[in-house]
Image 1 (spheres, rainbow, N blue to C red):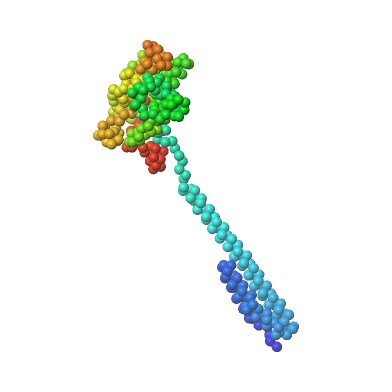
Image 2 (tube, rainbow, N blue to C red):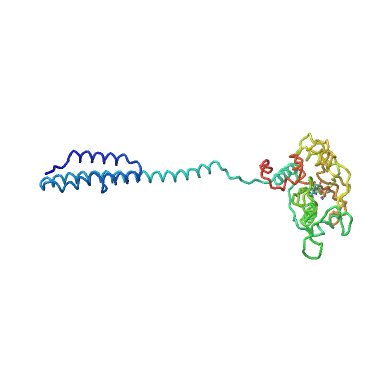
Amino acid sequence: MTTFPLANLAEETAAALTRIGAANELADLLEAHAHVLGRRSALVALQKSLGALAPQERAGAGATLQDARRRVEEAYEARRVELEARERQRALELDRLDLGDVVVERVTWSPSVGHPSLVATTQRELEDVFVAMGFRVADGPEVESDWYNFEALNIPPAHPARGMWDTFYVELGDPETVVLRTHTSPTQIHLMEHAVATNTLPVHSVMPGRCYRRDTPDARHLAAFHQVEGLVVDRGISFADLAGVIETFTRAYFGPDIESRLRPAYFPFTEPSAEFEITCTICRGEGCRTCSHTGWIELGGCGMLDPAVLEAVHIDPDEWSGFAFGFGIDRCAQMRHQIADMRALIDNDVRFMEQFS
Ligand code: FA5
């Protein structure tokens, strides 16, 4: 009669427990399970050997073997739970890492926040300069009737001066009666009409806004650009007042180093009229492509209000006089920031625009 090899059982059980404990991955554990509890395992072989035992010994050996199996099964189960938990944790950490990446990206990627364009900022700065000089800021429509844009400004139909402004017409009403304003000067008319209607003369106002001309864009021109109109209607106003305002504006906006000059010019709505120029800031007066090699850049026109314009809005030119000016805002921005080509203002190149945030 054979005896049950208890020493073998203890040895095999210990080996099985060690192998299960050593499994660090679920796949290793499954392999260990097959090895220590599978059909060809030592424990199964021992179980098979129970049949050869004497009945009285078989019961005791069977119980010992069952106990060993249970301990191995329990060790396997405990390790499985442990490894599965570890696997879940690892998956969670991977997920968290992914999230972490996103968070890190969010922190380092700062969405670019827009800012007012250089022209808008310049307009604001110009308004500030004029407000500091005692002007009020007013607004006018961009779509005008022919009367406001031309006739009331002493430019009757077919007047040769109309050629000074290449006009976009709006298809509204009779042909060529509604225009995209070619300058901010029609706002002068609105303001004077309002002052007369409300009996609120004198007027000291600036009127910034967008204008349109069928101009081919080049280094100094755009088809849609901006002007700031100035209008003073008061008693006893002289050309010296106009020159003083322009001089004060130039110093305040461009600084004392920039030279300015007024040159005789012609505008149908002012008499006398002048063009206002400053030293080209791109070449400092040397002459360059931007200033067409003259060393000077024209910023605007100005002059004393023509009595015909005052009469058109029922203001008595014997009692009231005044001056007006109209400067290019884009031109001012261009000269202030030494932008060689005005088209850069509308190219929408972020690298350009970000310089003026
Ligand atoms: C006028 O528009 C007159 N209304 C100015 C004026 C007002 C004269 C009041 C007398 C009294 P002019 O066409 O020269 O004038 O334009 C004035 C300024 O607007 C120019 O000097 C320039 O700075 C700017 N400007 C004109 N056309 C363009 C354009 N296509 N693109 C950019 N700026 C322009």
